Each structure stands twice: as C-alpha cells, then as structure tokens.
Amino acid sequence: MEPKQYYIGIDVGGTSVKEGLFDEDGNLLAKASVPTPPIVDAAGFAAVTEAIDQVVAKAQIPRAFVAGIGLAVPCPIPASGDAKVKANIAINLPELRIAIQQHCPDAVVKYENDANAAAMGEAWLGSAKGVQNVVMVTIGTGVGGGVIVNGDVVSGVVGAGGEIGHMC
Image 1 (cartoon, rainbow, N blue to C red):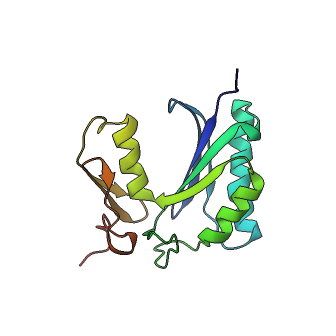
Image 2: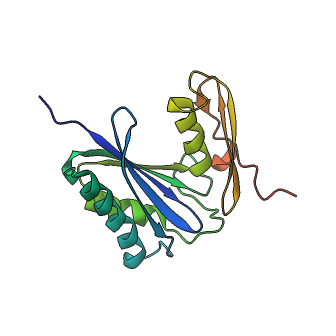
C-alpha cells in the first residue's frame, strides 16, 4: 500500500505568510504563520521553507510524502507565470519556486493569484461546493477577487480577470 500523499498550501500575504498541511481529502493537519519578509533573497525564501518544516514536523509527516505545494500570491498570474505587477509585497516568484522545489524535491510546486486560489478552495470544499459560477471578494492587506464561470477560473488578460481591488 502506497503512503498517503499530502499537500501544502501557502498564502503569501502583505503582512504574514500562512501555511497549512492537508491530506488528500482536504483536511487541515497542521498550520504555521510567519511575518512576511521581503521574499526576494535567501533569507526571505528560508522563512517560507522553514514554515514548511514546521507544518510537516507538527503533523509528523516526512517531507518526502508532500506531493504538491500551492502558493497563493497577491498578484495577477498570467499564463506565462511571469508576474509583473505585485501589490503590497516584495517577492521573486521564480526564485521562490526554485527554493521550495529544492527544499521539497518530491513535490510539484505551482502558484496562483490568492483570490483565485480562495475561490477554487470554496468551490472544492467550501460554501461554493457544487456551484458552477462564483464571485469571491477577498479582503486583507489589499482587496482581491476570484471569478469562476462554468467551473473554470477566469484568468483574463495578464492574469487579472478577477482583480477588483485598487479601483477608482
């Protein structure tokens, strides 16, 4: 029998980085939170990877059993993955992804706009479960929005399809 697979969700916010370890069914097993540093160099990347170590230690799960890591980030993510606009945060996404991949070589690492990720989570297991069309507003350090139409996230031009924050 193969060991169970686990997943880590990382919510990179303007004031804190929150991480959760989940099983295949979406049950939260452990969580950690650290103040958001500038995530642009080794020290910033270490804050994120050390929190990964915290959640796997709390749940007593070997890091090798982590199959996937999803980063929810407060910026539009275009199809190219090259985020140009970053509101309220200093982050180097390509280098952070590499640092996480090196720290957890058995995991697939992906990132998505934080409000889109929140909308997907609500559609999977939350208050929008079973609903095909969803609009979600997120309020934190900034304001964001995630839109799901016919079960698919609306990415829009340059990944900003649901971005409703910072409008005049």
